[in-house]
Length: 113
Image (cartoon, rainbow, N blue to C red; front, top):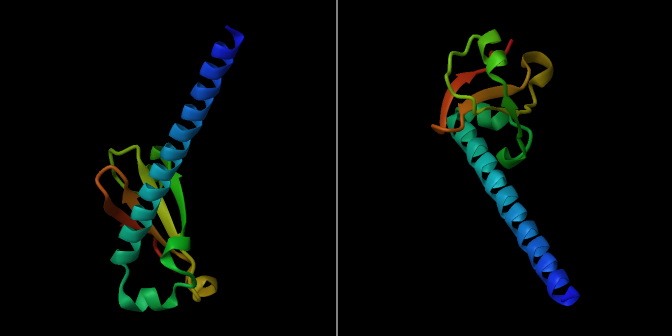
């Protein structure tokens, strides 16, 4: 009986670990897709000054309250900011693009000085 219980627990642990990994991969795929959307929105001139491959861009989820502070009106609670570092960061700052992850569309650009 103990062997059966231990076997069931072991199987459950293995399956839950697999599901967690699938979920992580799904999230990574979605974040990569958002980075690609941001990259595709850049002009050729902007792409030339990006320091790394677009896949290495930073990405962060933005809270609704921050969107209101920066003047972006959006009803989505699933907004991300993709940040491309450039060779002009010291003068102009990085390129920041806001994306509604639910609709997969750009809702704003961060101003560069």
